[in-house]
Length: 587
Image (cartoon, rainbow, N blue to C red):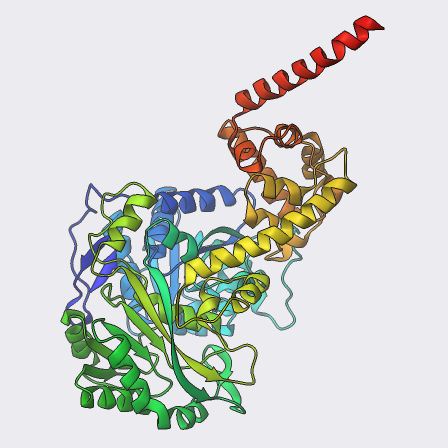
């Protein structure tokens, strides 16, 4: 079963379902999806290579389908890149469902026609010289990269350079234009991914000029669009000390054969843990190899569980997945890293990643298989509170992540806290929290955030004493409750460019200390926030500062309107003047 928006659609034996010639009239985007589309469209005025990050289950395919439709409506052509057949089919289906557009496929023996408004293409196919040359640079006005965290791979770069920079970009020794430099581009590029954290975005900044939208697991859970992840620690020690690293499709990671040797002796005990912790849940387990997946399924069956295994080598894998789709709670499927992308099963409520990894993107993809809500649970609910309440009352109130005690001498082993701790300082504070057998990841992150916020506020008070005439940007960000702005760090080369003269002048007009804003990305973020508050009719930065000085608490000052702030400040000045008046008269 595949989720499209908030609807479940069957793909019998992997074949695409046929839709009507037009999308349903009642099809509606979620608020954050509209915001994302708006951010992308606005970004084209300044950038031509942008990135959007949305958590698994947030509908990124629906979003880029809408962007593609808008591009075709302007007379352009669109190329959508993906690396698996499941993702290609998913893109074609959701594009047609949500926009009415039919894409043509460019893969293996399938050749898209030159006049196709939208082409969905396999990266493996169109990176070949003869297939790349079928569409000259400029043929497509927009290239969309699904799973854009892969964009820096050689095959992706070959395609993107050809379509964006032109034929000369494939020549030996070619170098990309410096950030901020003007150059001729043949097409714009939109990358979408669910797995780019701060470090990934910084790396992707080698190609993408700007991350224009970021809506991850944390925010989606708080808004009631995804279920909350809960971690249960299983006291089973698995020794990875000394396991070597080898090259994998996802980058350098633990050698899978070596991991299999360490994992095999504990698989039966692990299966017993699943039987106890997830007996009444529907579970997917990610194993490092086919052999360990087969062993896990056998051990679970011997313990009385309904268990199976699947891998890319199973000739009947579609039937196995269809049977798991139909199965209820108490069912477990072991897979050899087959189900990380392009597979959705909304009633999965327990995930275990028994394939230790150093790659956060891979871990996030695995856990993302279980973050979706059950179909229909949040339909028609307009507020986060209503959606969260509906999820809490549903048969799938959370996602249980089972985590073992991995004994490793590598500090970069990905853990469940890495799903929400995208900053090293937050991760550190989460690790410092008292150990417990089971904990809510969002609650843990919120506590770590409060601890970090207290440290930032202490630093802001220290800064504010040094700059009496101007507002320190850190202090201002914290005063309006914008922790993301207070903890801003550059994510790409454009962000690191010096702030422009116009940006610095605008900051100074609003009382923000320009000397504390050296980078263009930070200046842009602050200015965006100033403009946003102006549109909402909220107090200006100077007013917020004054409100704080007269004793208005930060949380109140941040939400005070411009008119209310003006009245409060006027009243304060009037009172101060009246206090001074008798002294002046006596003199």
